[in-house]
Image (cartoon, rainbow over all chains, first blue to last red; front, side, top):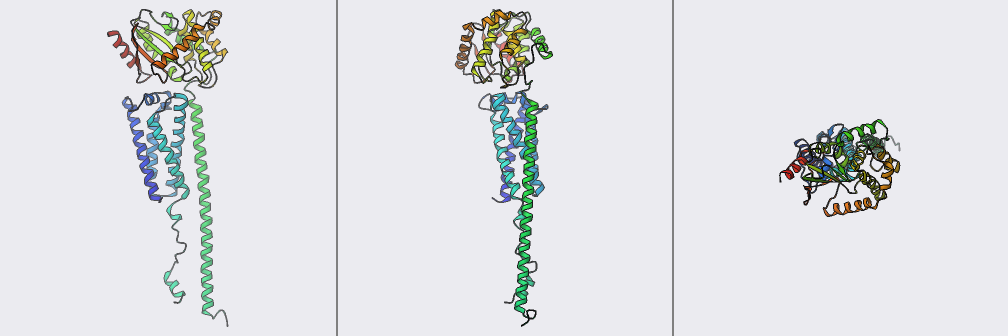
Length: 158
Length: 276
């Protein structure tokens, strides 16, 4: 997969995640029931774990996806790839914490949260891959191209 | 034949120099690439480690939303819980697991697990409003039923529930239930021990603890836990707290609460039954 294709795939995933987080944030502030196949989403959304330090976790998710998207849209560099890695790792860690709370504290799994956790898991895997394989410059260094082709032509008689 | 004057030899040397330079460059680039890769791996490890530390801190800080261990019977926290519960329940008639006027026109059944943090949330935030507005005024009677969800050990669940129902033999079950929720410890931490159950009993105002201990062996309460489970199953409940609301003596209807921290929907459902 080319670096460009990988980046585009990650942007698409982060945009979907941003959509999910935006919807959950809207549901939280509009005080309406999220669209869900059971009452699980509501239980999770209204549980004591739906806020961290007074901030709704949906808002934290929204901020996380915006940060990931921002780092992906920034010019390709070692720093931007590191930033994506940091943000996706933070998002993944937080998703794992929330999943733990859903399974062992709230005893209900919200489909929206599970889908966000799934997106974050794929994003962290892709960002690790992207970060470790480095930038395009590492593959395109002019190792065999002579600095002066004219000189080379003269040096090697036909 | 001097190698200096031999153009072919000179060319070979140039080519060799070129080759050597390229090899050197390739080695340098490979080394630089290795250093960069090592740096990336260190950064990756640092990021992963930092995230793990932060998540562990959040886990510890959030706990269960309450204290890790249940408060000791005479502690400040326990006294505070007792004061809250006494203010809420004092003067309201109780019979067995029912709180409120026996002739109240509307009945609400509350299916809960005493170790369930979600039930605690409902009990400490929304239930006081319902009790004050409808139970104290004689319009509603509340019936507590058990349903095993958060308690992992079935024997612990049975024991704690029988302990609560046994207080009902002295018409004080609701004190026991409310105190249990208000002093609930961390889920799965094993805080529900015999001394914890005894400690709660010692806090219930007016409870004869010797008689309560005897009542705990009464098979009526063990059977009640079984019939509660059957009722929960028949109603298709999948979690706690779950509710049934309806006209007293009639068929109660399942009530799906849109939220557990708002009394509004409960009040609307009760009002609807009162007007029916």
